[in-house]
Image (tube, rainbow, N blue to C red; front, side):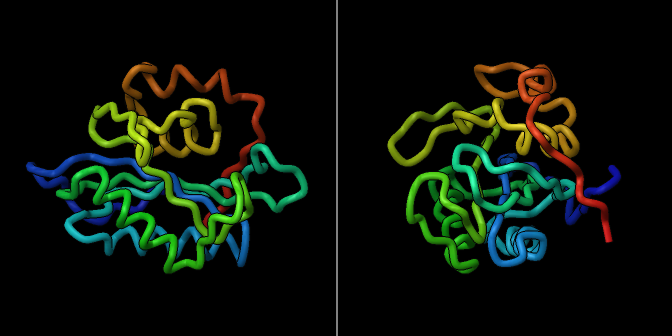
Length: 174
Protein backbone atom coordinates (compact mmCIF):
# COMPACT_ATOMS: atom_id res chain seq x y z
CA UNK A 1 0.00 0.00 0.00
CA UNK A 2 1.42 3.40 -0.91
CA UNK A 3 2.39 5.50 2.08
CA UNK A 4 2.47 2.59 4.51
CA UNK A 5 5.30 0.86 6.24
CA UNK A 6 5.18 -2.87 6.95
CA UNK A 7 7.22 -4.33 9.79
CA UNK A 8 6.22 -7.97 10.28
CA UNK A 9 3.68 -10.73 9.76
CA UNK A 10 0.59 -11.21 11.90
CA UNK A 11 1.10 -13.71 14.70
CA UNK A 12 -1.76 -16.23 14.84
CA UNK A 13 -2.41 -15.80 18.59
CA UNK A 14 -2.22 -12.02 18.56
CA UNK A 15 -4.98 -9.46 18.74
CA UNK A 16 -5.34 -6.78 16.08
CA UNK A 17 -5.36 -3.20 17.39
CA UNK A 18 -5.51 0.18 15.70
CA UNK A 19 -3.97 3.25 17.30
CA UNK A 20 -4.40 6.90 16.30
CA UNK A 21 -1.30 9.10 16.52
CA UNK A 22 -1.44 12.89 16.69
CA UNK A 23 0.76 15.84 17.61
CA UNK A 24 0.72 19.60 17.16
CA UNK A 25 3.69 20.78 19.29
CA UNK A 26 7.49 20.52 19.04
CA UNK A 27 7.84 19.57 15.35
CA UNK A 28 4.73 17.40 15.03
CA UNK A 29 5.94 15.75 11.80
CA UNK A 30 9.03 14.45 13.58
CA UNK A 31 7.00 13.55 16.69
CA UNK A 32 4.52 11.38 14.79
CA UNK A 33 7.24 9.71 12.71
CA UNK A 34 9.22 8.93 15.87
CA UNK A 35 6.06 7.72 17.62
CA UNK A 36 5.49 5.26 14.78
CA UNK A 37 8.96 3.88 15.43
CA UNK A 38 8.25 3.83 19.19
CA UNK A 39 5.13 1.74 18.61
CA UNK A 40 7.39 -0.87 17.03
CA UNK A 41 8.97 -1.23 20.49
CA UNK A 42 5.78 -1.79 22.49
CA UNK A 43 6.27 -5.03 24.47
CA UNK A 44 4.58 -8.17 23.20
CA UNK A 45 3.41 -6.31 20.10
CA UNK A 46 4.36 -5.94 16.46
CA UNK A 47 3.76 -2.88 14.35
CA UNK A 48 2.22 -3.95 11.05
CA UNK A 49 1.39 -0.72 9.25
CA UNK A 50 1.69 3.00 9.73
CA UNK A 51 -0.48 5.14 7.47
CA UNK A 52 0.68 8.20 5.63
CA UNK A 53 0.83 11.37 7.70
CA UNK A 54 -2.06 13.82 7.48
CA UNK A 55 -2.31 17.51 8.39
CA UNK A 56 -5.62 18.40 10.05
CA UNK A 57 -7.25 21.33 11.76
CA UNK A 58 -7.61 21.07 15.55
CA UNK A 59 -11.01 19.96 16.81
CA UNK A 60 -12.68 21.85 19.62
CA UNK A 61 -10.21 24.57 20.61
CA UNK A 62 -9.35 27.40 18.22
CA UNK A 63 -6.03 29.16 17.99
CA UNK A 64 -3.76 26.15 18.25
CA UNK A 65 -1.48 24.76 15.54
CA UNK A 66 -2.61 22.15 13.02
CA UNK A 67 -2.13 18.51 13.93
CA UNK A 68 -0.17 15.82 12.19
CA UNK A 69 -2.06 12.53 12.40
CA UNK A 70 -1.65 8.90 11.39
CA UNK A 71 -3.09 5.50 12.27
CA UNK A 72 -1.07 2.40 13.09
CA UNK A 73 -2.10 -1.24 12.97
CA UNK A 74 -0.41 -3.64 15.33
CA UNK A 75 -0.77 -7.11 16.66
CA UNK A 76 -0.41 -7.57 20.38
CA UNK A 77 -0.39 -10.20 23.06
CA UNK A 78 -1.24 -7.49 25.61
CA UNK A 79 -4.72 -7.26 27.09
CA UNK A 80 -6.51 -3.99 26.19
CA UNK A 81 -5.73 -2.16 29.45
CA UNK A 82 -2.09 -3.26 29.37
CA UNK A 83 -1.84 -2.00 25.80
CA UNK A 84 -3.42 1.29 26.87
CA UNK A 85 -0.84 1.60 29.65
CA UNK A 86 1.96 0.91 27.14
CA UNK A 87 0.59 3.67 24.89
CA UNK A 88 0.48 6.11 27.82
CA UNK A 89 4.09 5.19 28.57
CA UNK A 90 5.08 6.12 25.01
CA UNK A 91 3.19 9.42 25.35
CA UNK A 92 5.08 10.24 28.55
CA UNK A 93 8.42 9.55 26.84
CA UNK A 94 7.40 12.15 24.25
CA UNK A 95 6.63 14.74 26.94
CA UNK A 96 2.83 14.46 26.88
CA UNK A 97 1.06 16.43 29.59
CA UNK A 98 -2.70 16.37 30.12
CA UNK A 99 -3.27 19.98 31.17
CA UNK A 100 -6.86 20.28 29.92
CA UNK A 101 -9.24 18.57 27.52
CA UNK A 102 -8.18 19.02 23.87
CA UNK A 103 -4.99 20.86 24.86
CA UNK A 104 -2.16 21.11 22.33
CA UNK A 105 0.13 18.11 22.69
CA UNK A 106 3.51 16.67 21.81
CA UNK A 107 1.89 13.27 21.24
CA UNK A 108 -1.53 11.73 21.58
CA UNK A 109 -2.02 7.98 21.17
CA UNK A 110 -5.60 6.72 21.19
CA UNK A 111 -6.53 3.05 21.16
CA UNK A 112 -9.23 2.97 18.49
CA UNK A 113 -10.01 -0.70 18.05
CA UNK A 114 -8.94 -3.97 19.64
CA UNK A 115 -10.20 -6.89 17.55
CA UNK A 116 -13.97 -6.37 17.50
CA UNK A 117 -14.12 -5.87 21.25
CA UNK A 118 -16.65 -3.49 22.80
CA UNK A 119 -15.62 -2.04 26.17
CA UNK A 120 -17.21 0.75 28.19
CA UNK A 121 -15.27 1.33 31.40
CA UNK A 122 -13.94 4.37 33.26
CA UNK A 123 -10.45 3.83 31.79
CA UNK A 124 -11.21 2.56 28.30
CA UNK A 125 -13.94 2.79 25.69
CA UNK A 126 -13.71 0.54 22.63
CA UNK A 127 -14.25 1.29 19.92
CA UNK A 128 -13.01 4.81 20.57
CA UNK A 129 -16.29 6.73 21.04
CA UNK A 130 -15.64 9.53 18.51
CA UNK A 131 -13.41 7.79 15.97
CA UNK A 132 -16.18 7.59 13.35
CA UNK A 133 -16.67 11.38 13.53
CA UNK A 134 -13.04 12.37 12.87
CA UNK A 135 -11.54 12.65 9.40
CA UNK A 136 -8.08 12.43 11.00
CA UNK A 137 -8.99 8.88 12.08
CA UNK A 138 -11.17 7.64 9.23
CA UNK A 139 -8.90 8.66 6.31
CA UNK A 140 -5.67 7.08 7.61
CA UNK A 141 -7.56 4.06 8.99
CA UNK A 142 -9.09 3.35 5.60
CA UNK A 143 -5.68 3.76 3.95
CA UNK A 144 -4.26 0.81 5.90
CA UNK A 145 -7.50 -1.15 6.51
CA UNK A 146 -9.95 -0.38 3.69
CA UNK A 147 -12.46 -3.00 4.87
CA UNK A 148 -12.32 -2.03 8.54
CA UNK A 149 -15.47 -2.55 10.57
CA UNK A 150 -16.21 -0.45 13.66
CA UNK A 151 -18.22 -2.49 16.18
CA UNK A 152 -21.64 -0.96 16.68
CA UNK A 153 -21.05 1.54 13.85
CA UNK A 154 -20.55 -0.59 10.72
CA UNK A 155 -18.07 -0.05 7.93
CA UNK A 156 -15.48 2.68 8.53
CA UNK A 157 -15.89 3.66 4.87
CA UNK A 158 -19.58 4.39 5.46
CA UNK A 159 -18.51 7.26 7.76
CA UNK A 160 -16.56 9.13 5.07
CA UNK A 161 -19.54 11.36 4.16
CA UNK A 162 -19.95 12.35 7.83
CA UNK A 163 -16.37 13.69 7.95
CA UNK A 164 -16.10 15.02 4.41
CA UNK A 165 -16.29 18.69 5.46
CA UNK A 166 -13.34 18.40 7.87
CA UNK A 167 -10.05 19.75 6.53
CA UNK A 168 -7.47 17.03 6.02
CA UNK A 169 -4.53 16.73 3.64
CA UNK A 170 -1.96 14.00 3.17
CA UNK A 171 1.56 15.19 3.93
CA UNK A 172 3.87 14.50 0.98
CA UNK A 173 6.52 11.89 1.70
CA UNK A 174 10.06 13.19 1.84
